[in-house]
Length: 233
Image 1 (cartoon, helix red, strand yellow):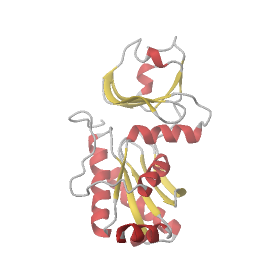
Image 2 (image 1 turned 90 degrees about the vertical axis):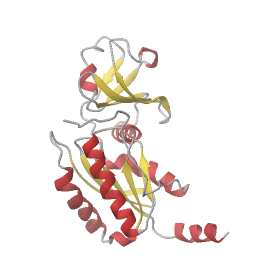
Image 3 (image 1 turned 90 degrees about the horizontal axis):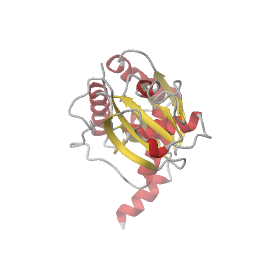
Image 4 (image 1 turned 180 degrees about the horizontal axis):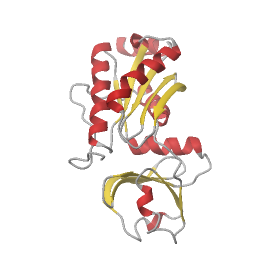
């Protein structure tokens, strides 16, 4: 009973959540308040800058909001699949901050966050296939309907000319989708090459998990690599 009362009192306050996205070459940090995005700073390039930029981006969004790390209610992190190195960096920083601040850690499936990014940019899309490059002809992928529900759950696959035929028509996003443009050129599939993965995609998902107290064990949490090792290079 006491825990429930304390939680209700906590929810009456401003709930600031820091969102960290490092699963691909995009390095992105966002800050939300009560489930609404406040600030975001990010860099999308051809190389990994997480080790150089992540701490600076975190400082920047906190400074923009004029709050201190101690004002944070939780931190959300992209949990994979994606780059082994990128995920390790993001998770290490998030866990370190959660330990230091004694706040919860929230994990967000990377492909779900990517789907949210696509929806924000293109609200009228129907089914979405998110694909992250996993080297050679393999991708990390998942398919979602218009409500954001999984049509096909997260997996690492080598795709061919007829893969996912049963889900057509759909739209492909992600840095792995370029591999399939030639293979799937005669199918009912649209490709969007200007939709980047961003921490903004975590905001709605993370706030929902926060309200439900769906937290990770900070000491033991590990990213979902799906495969044993993917360097991202």
